[in-house]
Amino acid sequence: MTSYTVINPATAEPVTEVHLASLEETDALVERAHAAFPAWRAMAPGERAALLRRFASVVDAHIEELAEIEVRNAGHTWGNATWEAGNVRDCLNYYSATPERLFGRQIPVPGGIDVTFHEPLGVVGIIVPWNFPMPIMAWGMAPALAAGNTVVLKPAELTPLTAIRIGELALEAGLPEGVLTVIPGKGSVVGERFVTHPLVRKVAFTGSTAVGKRIMAGCAEQVKRCTLELGGKSANVIFADADLAKAAASAPYAVFDNAGQDCCARSRILVERPAYDEFLGLLETAVKNMAVLDPQDRSSEMGPLISAQQREVVQGYLEGVDVAFTGSAPDGNGFWVPPTVVLAESTDQPVWREEVFGPVVAVLPFDDEAEAVAMANDTEYGLSGSIFTGDVGRALRVARGIEAGNLSVNSNSAVRYWTPFGGFKQSGLGRELGPDAPNAFTEEKNVFIADGS
Ligand code: NAD
Image (cartoon, rainbow, N blue to C red):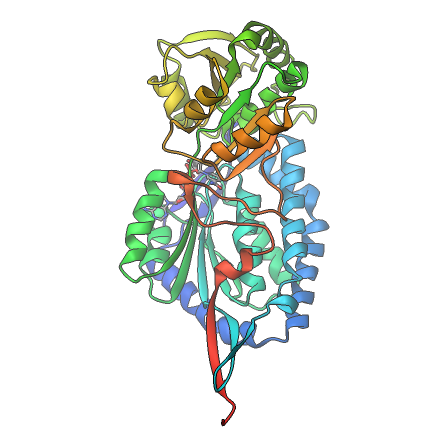
């Protein structure tokens, strides 16, 4: 039997042991999910909706407990962890409206009528990364269940605890056995089995672009549906006519939130040259004021990195670069890196091009709008980004010009469960969240009914 020791990243102390499922155990649980599918699919829409609302209520009653688990397991701040648990509840409530609104269309055709149906797929496999265990679980699980699928879900090795607890809460809420099954395990065992198992009809993967490419290639063998939510290297573009104080005050949270371990992190800041010095001065004050503290302290705004290995990766990006200034970080055994602002020397530097996935942001000036758009797009990724300007026409032009799935103007907000979320280019395939998300967990079928003419 293999198990994994969960570590508290703020202290490097062990938290608990988690059993990692074997291939045989995974197969048995996929078969159980397959067996649960016909009854879940056949359940009256109102009844399935009521169960999802009850699941949301049970999660709501455990927000504090789930947040406490995430603070210990992932080093998230209390503020973030509480929001994340609430996001699970909100997604379940939002998609609980789906079963009663899973409409088809009627299309008049010669000789009769054609009606369409959205049919659930069967067993859906959801693979979750370690950076936002609860929300990303919910973004796949809630619409997939609502559309009538059963779900097998693999949390990341490093952060399985909230997913395990949410799986228990689903049973407590009355979801039948096998409708939602959380399977902690290795990517190379459980994750790969979701890809190769013929009874898993879709894989919804969130994680690195490297693993995403492998999943896509594996799914091709069975023409298996897959959606991929992958990495990012997003730009925060600041024009000289922007409210610079506002842009600088929010920029640290746009990249250092969750210690920079955020696919939407605005880890490149592009500043129009006339505003460059003033913006950097304001940014320095904002970064130095960030409360980087043990996340057990409820006033902490940034916690540690997830692991010693991740800290090593991040520190690697800081070798030989021009660090303009840093914020603070606690001493101690946790996996700490202070928020760090780097003056990039060129757009070829790894710190400018690659997803650091840590509290590091690189800054470069630009001279005009066309150059800003070209620089923002000079990346293999296209997930997110922000534009700060006082000119609404420019905001629209630049937003249309940047090749990314989720942009904000005069704001760094990235994700709302009621608007679609997903990447361009190597940031992924497909859209999660928003009103259409359940359709990604169905097939559209048309049925022709002859009128006898
Ligand atoms: P990862 O790719 O290493 O792992 C993600 C998940 O895939 C884990 O559960 C892992 O166990 C599993 N896995 C690993 N190898 C596998 C394999 N061969 N087959 C099947 N499953 C396998 O990513 P990570 O380090 O956990 O997460 C960080 C990455 O996730 C970053 O690149 C980040 O940008 C990305 N991310 C993207 C989004 C988005 O919505 N676009 C959101 C969050 C994170």
